[in-house]
Image (tube, rainbow, N blue to C red; front, side, top):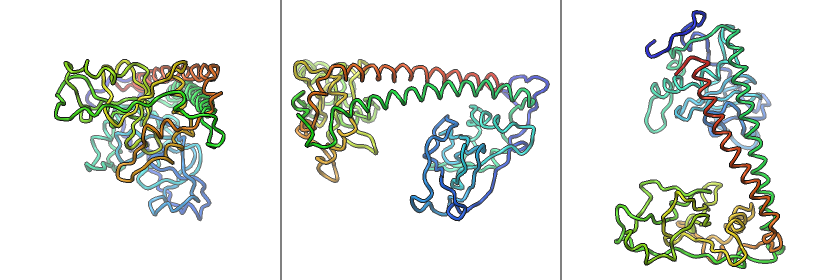
Length: 393
C-alpha cells in the first residue's frame, strides 16, 4: 500500500470490506412504530453525533426511507461524500437508502473504533475519488470495500477509542457551553424587542437613524479599488467578499463620498432579500472589511448620542426583530424592506437603554467567541490525533 507509514508488527493491513458490512434491514417506519428518521441534512460534517432528526409521524417520508438502524450503528451519507458525513446513532430509527448503515462484520473490529476509521482523511479521499456523477456524486458500498487501512489489535483499539472519546467529550462540553452562552444572548436580546407591538414603549428610530447607501453609478466601477458593500455581501452575522459578487470604486474618488465610508463596528442590513432561509441578513463591519463604501439598498444604523452600536446590534438580533420586519416586507420577485421599516421596529426603551443588559450580552458574546477558539483548537487536535493514533498521515 503506497504512501503508508510503517506499522507495528501487531497491526494488520486489510480491506474495509473484510471487517465491515452494510446492514440492509428494511422496515416500514410507521408499521414498525419508529418515532425518528434521519435525513442527510440531519448529519453534520466531521461530527459523529446526530443532533437533529425528524419525527416519522410529521408527514410523508417517501419510499426511500426504509433503512432501519439501531443504536451504535454507523450512518454514512453516500451522496456528496466530500461533506464527510459520518455519524453514530444513539437511538433507533430509519433513514433513506442513500445513507449507508454500517457495522463490524467480525469481532476483530471494535464497533466504537469503526467511526474513527471512517473519519480519517484517507478514507474520505478514497470515497470522493471513487464517487460517480457530477451534479450529485454518489458512491456504492462495493467501492468502499477495497479501501485499505491498518487495524491494530483489540487492546490497542480500546486504548485509541478511550483517548479519542476523551477529546470528543471536551469538544462536546465546549459546544454545550457555547450553546448556553448563545441562548443567553438571545434571551437577553428578547427583552429589547417585545413580540407584541402594543407592549413597546418606543421605536428603533428613537435610538438611531438608518442611512441608505449611495447609488454609485456602475459605469464608473473599476477592477481594483475600494470595495462597495452590496446586499449580496451582507450575510448572516458576517460580511462576505466573494470575488464574483464584489464591486470596486476608484480609490481617487473615495474622498468625495466620505459620508458613506464604513467604520469598524458598523451595523448593516441588506434591504433587498433581507431573509435567506431561516437567516436574517445583518452584519457587523470588522477591520478586515475595510476600506469599503456603502452602496444603495444596504442600510447602516447610525446611533444617536448616548446610544452604542452594540445596543443596535443586540436589538437587530432579538428573536422578534425578523418577525416584525417580515410583516413589513414588500414585493414577491424582489422582497425588500425600507429604512422606515427598520426604524419602526418596536422596542422596550427601558431595556434598550439598560447598560447592565448590554454588559451581560457583551459578556455572553465574549464567552461565545472564547469557546469558539477552543472548539476550533480541539478540532485541530482531534484531527492530528486521528492521524497519529490510527497511523494515517
